[in-house]
Image 1 (spheres, rainbow, N blue to C red):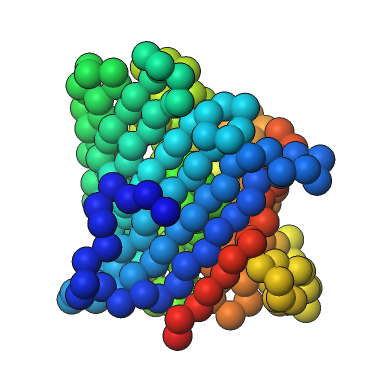
Image 2: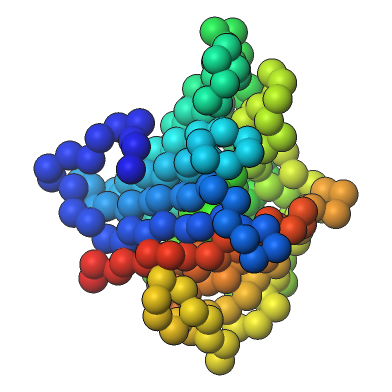
Length: 244
């Protein structure tokens, strides 16, 4: 697994895993590895390596997220590049405040900055299966006063990174309108993932002009075991380790 910032000796592992991306039931060549660790003063680090070097796109996404005690993202650092010589290279940082987002980004050497003012109950996620976890405000263990956690159908505004790769807006922070996040099922379902049978619930995230994701969340931790995307791409956990 590749990192933006290497894991430090003082960090304690909490969870880790790997997803395989598929289309029509066949592997695309893309895999996503992630590790969640406990840091100092109640903070956690999430590292994600979305590796599509063996897929048609040839893309790489690396994420390093700082999570607070409510398991919400406070800061996200990321890198993106392709395996094509002279291709797109992007680095960026996003700081999430109670009602605003500050983002800086460098695309092929060109720097830019964005500042967004948002309502208090905005939702956030970033392009990856692990990144979808945060659309509900954090993990299952997050306190009930989380800024945007809800077990009921919910609508509002959100913020994510532009996942349409190819120009200067790649991974730019973008506001999301007409956002809805609601449960499709909440109990009693089972799926095979990482060689085991897991109980899970299904959630639907939708926004904008017909975009959606289905998130399969583990019953014990709330962490995603897989996802379905509006263009037919799916992902399922091949590894899922809970160290606690």
